[in-house]
Length: 395
Ligand code: PLP
Image 1: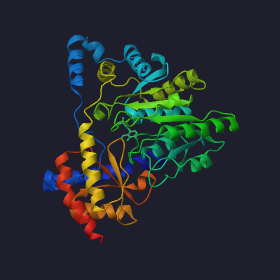
Image 2: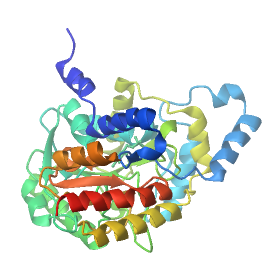
Image 3: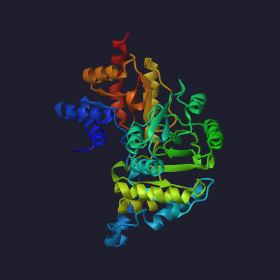
């Protein structure tokens, strides 16, 4: 009668959405100041002024027929040229407009890239802790997810376990750095070693193993931390980018897939990406916001506010005795829960203190909670005494 798999995905809401919905109900009941919602990764800084200016310029200066009309399935040519110019300026790689396919954000980029590459039974390697939707995207494409456990306590990559996980059936590896939920940024050394392993395995098995760089947080790093650009290290890299976080535009649904010429059979893979977009109805990303990103290619929001939040939350929680690694990027803290069952711990925090924290199990890792700090600074200040009470409950 209907697809059992799609029913399962639709009827079991993600844990994050569940907690967020609980918070919304509590806000209606108790008022906004009584609820401390650290559940979602919804940017809390406004889009930069350049976005607003671009929207007004486009609406005033361009033909409304063009602005609100269909673009080419893969996106407006001039916008793709602007994206290519930006990538060529910033990184050691040469790409052109025909290497880009514009999408409705990183989720659509990942879905298209995964569909484009997967034949039934192909294996996809992910590193725990990982973005929970990877599983849904890969399984819907008839692929199989293989998890690599984290290297503790720093949440960098366990290279030995990574190597053990690669098999003849490995189609691709997804790397998300800066990472949701750990905030870890993979160092140059880590990336170098990972890609050396992949090159060795490509030779051993005689077929390409693709690297998918899931990069919505590329621009959100603190201090002088560098995020290595994966295509510079490994030719078979496909980039899935999004403006949801860097320009604070998650609701506008805009991002891209980049398939550089250096990727094995790049033209065929690019065509398969177009085919995946077509088969899922993801053609022609939102036209107005294609034009906006074309004008704001090198802009980012004022991420200083996230750094201030990170410093307050990390400093205060570790002073209270919570254990966590200082994140170099993204806007999440991944904190050890005070009892082994993270679901139970987060339930108590929610029901006793209205502290909304996300248990780590759906990220492929037990015993932690994700605390999103893309929130108002004063909410963190007001929540700290509750984190203190919660800690005392376990002493
Ligand atoms: N990948 C990761 C690691 C994410 O954290 C998210 C969103 O939070 C996405 C992909 C999806 O991003 P988008 O909103 O651009 O679809």
